[in-house]
Image (cartoon, rainbow, N blue to C red; front, side, top):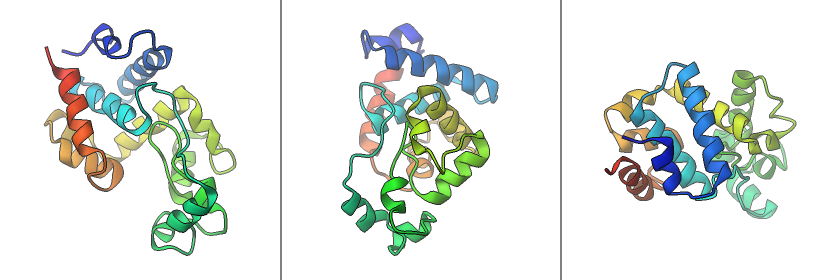
Amino acid sequence: MITKDKFLKFYPNNLNASKCWDEMLNQLYEKQLLSELMMVAMLATVRIENGRDFLPRREIITPELAEAHYGYQTRVGKILGNTQTGDGYFFRGSGYPQLTGRWNFQNAQNKTGLPLITNPDLLLDIHNSVLEMVLFAQEKGVKQYADKQDWDTFRHIWNGGSNGLVDFKRVIGDYLSP
């Protein structure tokens, strides 16, 4: 069983990891999504998407590369709902969920009430990042996959593919080990 003490043994003296645990526990409980496996899956997602310091961050990418990958004229940019020059960089991966694209930011803004379209950096706050993650998890129904330990489906729904899947499964295994 994962406990906060056990979790923090992986990240000693890490105040961000401690705060992330507390926020995740509270938000999952509040949205009636709390289970041990869901908690583990969400914390592992944060770990894989943001690193061992548990600091919410923006995707590290140059404006030019972001526009080449996510710009409004690219196939991916169109899928992400980017509509104008600069959207690829402005709406690059943000916060714990690594939210990307104008459409996703608008959807997250509608769910959270945060003005994310004008201020994506609000996802750099741990509380806001966890809130968006939990609302996304609720919207996508990923708890059923966490509770069945269907990590492939959980991860596919989370990021649209298998990016980070091997590391995700390793972190899950670490968290669930005796």
